[in-house]
Image (cartoon, rainbow, N blue to C red; front, side, top):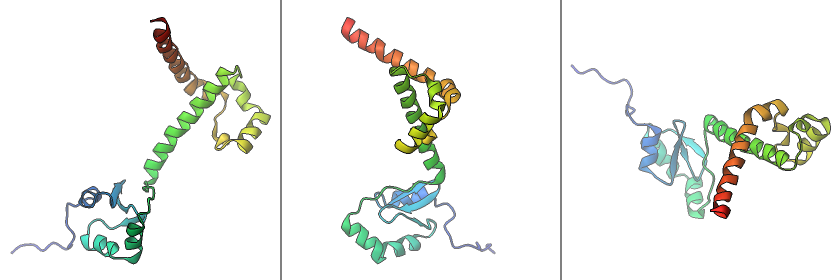
Length: 157
């Protein structure tokens, strides 16, 4: 006698598999299935749940309007992308300070901190002098050195 499966769910369907069945409408992020126009998390194991969502007035209206909404990300993916932009912001700050001969230690000055927090978006997130020097200065130096060598080959070459 065959043993009955206690669950009626398909055993091997993933959120990515379900998203591939409906490209442009569904997307997968972090193992979760999202409806792109509606920004909702859907149950990916039951196809009927997805089809029921597609039949809702909200989903139909959003598709008809052609609303472009940004894709939702899981917290892990969002943190990763923020980390990348944080590094870019900090490198840009170091490049700016070095270009105009402002010592990086001035980043720790209370007046400079107050200015950054009040007048620059995410300016309060710029790290202190030691972290700027240890983590970002060498990268900025290497980029500048590479850029100056390329421009020299263009002009001198």
